[in-house]
Image (tube, rainbow, N blue to C red):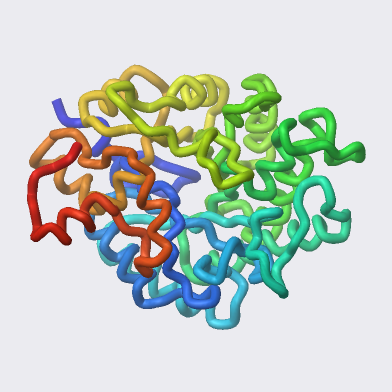
Length: 360
C-alpha cells in the first residue's frame, strides 16, 4: 500500500504534492529586516528536500512589529522582488510556499523604532494600524508570487495574547468574552482578504490551548475557527502553547516515545471544520503519521524542528522509513549566532569530526 502522506491534497484549490508540511521556523537570517542569500538558500534546500508545502518563519507585517532585526519584514522597499526569488527557488523544486505573517506585540525588539505595546495597553489606533499592515503585507506576498499566507495567531505574540484569557485583561470590546478576544484576529483576517481577494490562500496557525491556566477552551477555539471558515478561511494549522517570558514552559514540548501531543486538538478541529486541518508538533515516525492520516480527517502533518536537522526528511523517507533524527532538544531555537537556524546536535557532531552515529 502506498503511503498516504505522499498523496496530493488541496488547500483552497491549490494542489500540494504531498501531505508533509515544513512548518514555520524562525530563520534568524534577515539583515535589518531584509531577505538575504542565506535566507534564500535555506528555503531552496527545504524545497529540494521534498516537502510538499513550506511555510516560512514568521515575517513582520511592519518593521516596527518585528521581534528583532533578524526577522524579515514583509513591508520593506524591495521585499516583493526579494521574496519573488525565494518563491522561484521553491517552485523550481516542486514545492509550494506560504508566508507566515506576524506582529510580535509586547515581544517586539526593545529598541527605538519598534512598537512597545502589548495586549492590555494597545490603543484602538494602534490596533487599526496593525490590522491595516497585515492586509498590506499580504498584498506584498501575493505580488511576490507566494502561494498563500498564514496568520500566526499562536505562541504568545500579539494575536495570541488577545485570544488568551491568561494575558488579555482588557475591559473594552477586545476583552472578556471569546467574541471580544477574537475581534483582532477576525479583523486581521478581513483586512488580508480585502487586500488579496477571494482566490488567494489564507490560513491561520491557531492556539487550541495555552497550556497554562486560565486557558482558552476547546469550545472557544472551535467557535473562532468556525467563524473564520464562514468568512472564507482556507486552512488551519493547530498548535498550542503560550510563551510570554521566554521560558518555553508552555511551548515546544520535548517529545519522548509518545508522538503528536496536539493531535487530539487537531482531530477535534478536523471533525468540526470543512477546510483542511494540518496537525503540527511531535511527528517523528512514518507508521504513526500514516495511521493519523488514514484514521482521522486531518489533511496533513507539519514539522518544525525535524526540518532543521533533516531538511531532506521527505526524500529520505521514500527510501528509509526510520524515525526522524530530531531529538526535540529545542536547542535549534537558540541558534541566533549561527546566521541561520541550525541543529546544534549536528553542529556538535561535525565539530567532533563528522561522527555519523545518530543521537536519536
